[in-house]
Length: 240
Image (tube, rainbow, N blue to C red):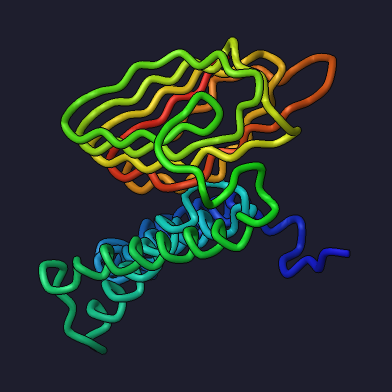
C-alpha cells in the first residue's frame, strides 16, 4: 500500500491558482493605496520561481522535469534571500551548482538502473550495438537506423550535438517491457515505435523537451517501452 504524502487536491494547478488570487489581492490593495505593489514585486519576485519549482517537483515520480524543479527551487531561494539582505548571491558565482545537480541526477539514475540490471532482459556481457539491444553514441554526427528484430530488449542512445533516428515499427519486444536509456545535449533523438506498444516517459528534460506523440494501443497484448535518461538543451520525439 502506497502512502500519500500530499493531499490529492494539492496540485500544480492549485498552487498557481493561489498565486493568481494573491496577485489580484495585491494589485487591488495597491489601487486603494494600502501597499506599493511595485516595491512588493521587486522584493518577492523570486517566490514565483520557487513556486514553479515546487510545482515541478510535485509531479509524480515517473514524470519528467523534477530535476529542473530542484534547480528552480534552489536559485529561487537564493535570490529571495539576497533580496532580503540575508545572503549575498550573484548568478555568475553560483551557476556551477546546476552542473552539480545534473551530475547528481545522472549518478542517481545510473545507480538505480544498475540495481535493476540482474532482472532486466539484457545481460552485462553484451557489448556494442545489435538488433536486440541498441547502443549508439553520436558526436556532431548522426545515425538513422531501422530495427526489425523479433526480440528487442532495449538500448542506450547518446546524442551530443548530433541526431539519432531509430525506427522500431517492424520490431517485436522480447518480453512485456523494455527500457531505452537516452541522453542528449544540443542534439535530438527520434524514436518510431509499433502501434501495439505503450510508451512511458521517465526522462528528465532540463531546458529541453520530450514529446510523446504516440497513440495508446486499443487492443491486443500491451508492450511497454520505458524511456529514461536526461535531455539537456535538446529534444526527444517519440511517435507511432
